[in-house]
Length: 239
Image (tube, rainbow, N blue to C red; front, side, top):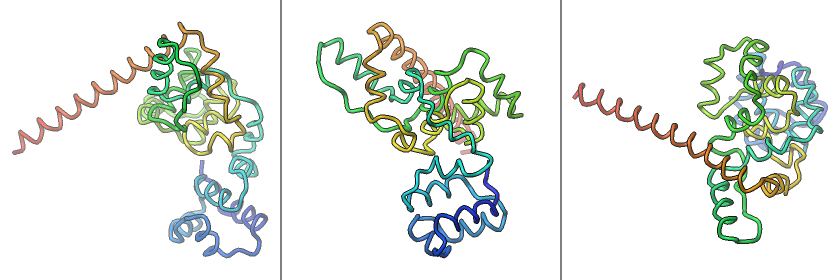
């Protein structure tokens, strides 16, 4: 949910009272036209606050929590569950972990930084008790098919990430890390948190999870191949 321009300007004046709009755009990397358009419309994107906060050395999550819509972000202190941490490990890293364990290799892996190609869907799957999507739809007013479409595209709006966390009864950090709005460090996660969650998985659980990820990847690839074939067929018919 975009932030009210007046609330944004009050916040900005509080954290950078002497900075002009040009100064803010220069240090944050935002385009002046983009920020100006958002202010004129009266709605400032969350990403703009995140970029400005980082440039000013302010934790983006703490900055967003100053706005009424994101006041619940103060609950970022609630740590993510082990399942949420594992959900933010890329599929290729999971497969590498399977191979390492199978071959008896010791030592920790170098995990890729989230978000990854399926981080949003993996996170939702990790906190879903079977009825989560219905609860999120009922609470947010977003049709189930539209919610599913965002998951398929590996994206989730900030308001839906919060609605999902609330409906699942978990903290808000993992949802924002999964969507790429904030980083692990900004969410307050330990640098070794994901690795420790991975190490805690039994061999059976690790292989089962990796298998589930591969099946999901196979479905995605088949769908992409079908869409490509349909596109080529259309071009052939036109040509």
